[in-house]
Picture 1 (cartoon, chains in turn yellow, brown):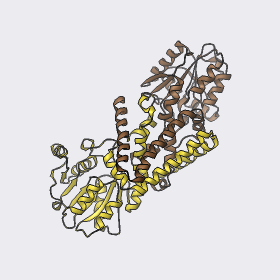
Picture 2: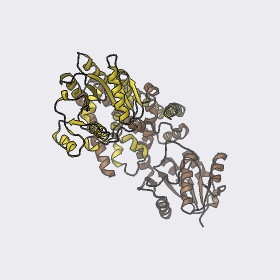
Picture 3: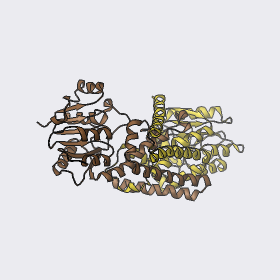
Picture 4: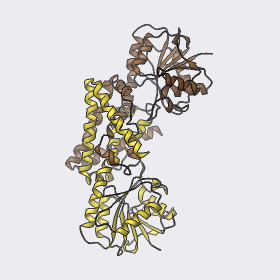
Length: 274
Length: 274
């Protein structure tokens, strides 16, 4: 039986371990926090502790990018092992992997799944069910490894599965994930926010749900994707400034036009996703 | 039996009609669109057409602010009628009502409920169940009318019911509702948005859910609450600029601090709402 290791048992790694075990795989895990590792063992999320990477046929790295790069460059993997990172940025990962020869077969994975909470206690066997998955592929990607990634994706019940380059991934998730976390984090900084109990509806809940980001992890993600997140953030500020100007100047026509433009785009997104 | 009229049968007015009728009240309705009125009659959302305001003991105005002001200033109401507007801004409404003597008793209502879609076909008998309701009160507010508003609120199954001045309402909903709709509308304007199928998760859905605003109604709402929405919009742009600067300059410490600040505020909101 093939042996699978998951490094990092936060919400993503632990959810992956639980989902794979529920589908009959033998899964070992590792986390640098002894209490997390202990929690995973006691709750049966993993079968054992993954000590040596070279013992495993499949390795998933569910740790922050820099830590994942360090493992990819320094650990001893089994010859031909399937090794995937589950980081939120891909360009730097791929660059590090392909900078030197390696005996393992690398694929990048990014499940578009998560919660506003983190850690092993937020993990769920069903976190990936129906969620989008991005698989990053380069010219160096091993065809069989890519097929194995697709099989894992199907096994885990992902919804839409997209394959693209690391560059494309990094440009798009800057908008779909990274910018959203900054906006939410900024949104709660209004002075009004402390006095808004009873004045909130679904719009406010949606805007502020993911404000409580882990500042360590997200700082790392943003710094490793600077050109893309910067383009999105600057773009959003520019767009917001159009509404601001129109309101400040009492320019009803300009404001109406700005709102109608957004509405038209929203309709297209909706139609595409239907 | 007291007679109730609802003017405007969009999502809010029609939901109100259906909820009140489900609780045994007799409700007439009016909408300037003949097909909407017809739809309401055919589906039994209203008992009849509300033609003359002076026939009703209770009148709810679920129409845009300027139209509501026009009705409040020009219609002939029954002596002592309970008349409430359900607009998203309150200062201008109150000012118009109290500018001259009147024979009706006015209260402002703002249910913090809605959907990303509008119109009578989006209405629901349960739209207000558990939702927050803001009742605006001035020194001129009739004590019995306020009690009647509270009774309606309880009858409709609202969750938290807050009473405050029109000024306080306008300042707070600028953040909790108005700003959210601009942000969502601006968010979809990224050039990446057209190519993001499969790259989205819950964060993107949340950010873009309410992007498709009705530009007529929202332009009116923004223009009638300019100082407050401008303060919130400028504040958000200023806050976003802090992250932008930190990312542009590679200032990890500054970015980490900005994210940690938002996280700390988010925790407090959460605790307060628990």
